[in-house]
Length: 308
Image (cartoon, rainbow, N blue to C red; front, side, top):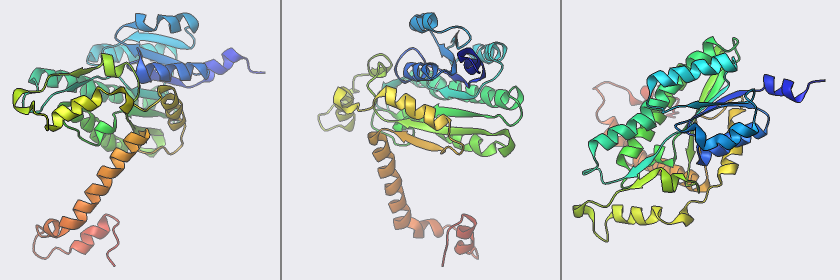
């Protein structure tokens, strides 16, 4: 009969970034409680000392990681290989946000945020793909979950550079997911949470004052700042989100993109439907730029669109 320790030793291994609070913390708690193993990464390991005391090293490995540190990122994957010998699920969760009008947003602050929201996760994805293909047994594969937000699909006032990082990660994920060979069994999913009641709102979301030219009662940026200061708009439950992500990671054929929360679902759906309406309204202009002699119906059929 298999013992509890045998189950743990054969369970999936998760690597999660940004585990100090919020969704990252809720996720590793859910995974650990289910008997699976976790590599928890965060800038300050002391923040989850209580978990380190509760779970043995055979189930929980805590690693210090600033996702902008390329050398440290490689070291974390090497530590994962040495400690657990396998890696099944990688979750890019670390991040923060800043509000500010595009015209006046500090360039250095924008670059720093892009490093965390895009370059860090992109680097982790590269390491994850190599690990899942070359260290895991052939065909075992793995899953990569990249957490963006509804702000990875829909742009809101005062979020231009935050959205830039999240949009970039979504586009990169869509692209590299199509490059992965089927026999590797490595699949990627974009997770788009809505508003969740976490420390992110207080500790990892910086609200800058409106620039003078934009500081008007009717300005969209002023309205957006007021909205994000209202806790009632954050309707998501992180514990439920963690359960949903565990479910997604276990799907044989996961979606490339999924929303968490009714607010995210509706924001993405409304934009998608609006985009379709614009396409249909202005398609004559789109077709008008083809070379003479090009048969638009043949091109449309190449994309799987019926023309009859």
